[in-house]
Length: 441
Image 1: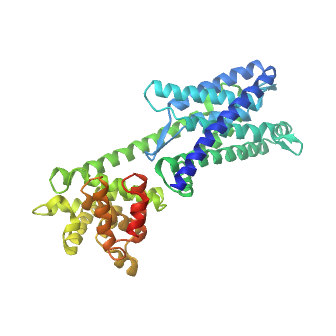
Image 2: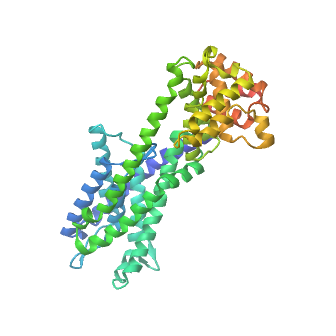
Image 3: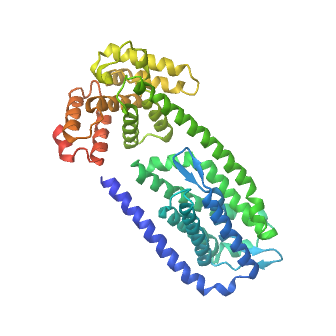
C-alpha cells in the first residue's frame, strides 16, 4: 500500500509539473513570437496537424499499451528544427515548441474521445509536454560551453554526421524519459514493481521507440533541407512500421480470444463453475505482478491459468463443484498431465504445457528438486484459493480459504506466493491487514 500511495503521489506530481511547464512555456513563447519566420509558422502548422493525426492513430503493443510513433516523432523533431530551406531560420523558442506540441496533443486526445476511438488520458498529455520540454531545453536552451547545442549545430554545416549524432543524443534522452513515464503509468495501473515495469516497457516498445527516435532525427534534417513537405514524406517509413506492428497486435489479440474461448470449454461442459478459469487467471497475474514477473512470463501465466483445467474434459464424471483441490493428489496429477498433453500437441500453446503439468506438484517437491517453476507455484495457489472460495468475495469465506491454505504452507504451497496473494486481497479490500497478521503467514 505504501508503494501504491508513493506512485499515486508521483503521478499527481507529474500532472502538476506538466501544468507548470505549460504555463511557463506560454510566457516564454509570448516573449519570442516575433522571432518566428513565416515559413516557420507553416512548418509548425504541419507539425501540429501531424501530431493530431498521430494521436488519433496510436498503435497497440502486446494488447496492453498503446504508443504513438507518428505523433512522437513529429513532437521530437520540432524542437530540433532550427533552420529551413534557403537558409531561413525557423525561430522556434523552447516555449513555443512546448505550447504547439502540448496543444496539438491535447486536441488529438480530445478528438479521440469525441470520436469514441480512445479515452482522454491526462497523464499521456502531461508526459508529452515533459518529454518535448526536455528535448527543447537540451537542444535550444541549455548552455554547452557557453552556447546552446543548436548554435553549435549551425557551425557544423559541413559535418552533417556530427549534427545527426547531436540530434540523436537529444532524442535518445527524451525517449528515455518517455519510457520512464510510461513505466510509471503501467506500474500505477497494474500494481507492478516500477523497475520491472521499466524493463517491460523497454522490451515491449523499445524497438519501436528506437525507430521513432531515428525518424525524428531524419525528419528534422529533412525539414531543414526540403521544408514542411518533408514531414509527411519522411514519416512514410515509420507509418509502414506502424502498420506492421498493428498487424502483429491483431494476431496476438486473435490468439488471446482463441485461448479465452478454449477456457470456456470446461464451463460449458459442466466440469468447472462458470468463470473459474477467468478468476484464476486474474488472480495469478495479480500475484505475478506482486512478485515482479516479466511481461512475457505474465502472458504465459495468464494463458496457462485460463487453460489449467482443460484436462477435466477427459473425466467420465465431473468433479463435484469442479474443485480439483478436493480430489486425491494422484487424480490432480492425472488431470494436469492430460491438460498438458492436449496443449503440447499445439505448437503455439506447447510452451504452456509445462506450467499446466506442474500445477499439481507440491511446493516441497519444487523446493527440493527445483523442477517446479514459480509460474506453477502461482497457478497452484490461485487455483486452490478459487476452489475454496467458489468465486465468493465475502470476507468470512476468504479468511476460511486462507486458513485452509495456511495449513499446508511450506509443503503444498509456496509461502512467498501465499504472502503475495494476501497483499493482493488486502489491496482489493477482501481482507484487512489485521486479518492477515492474525493468520501469521
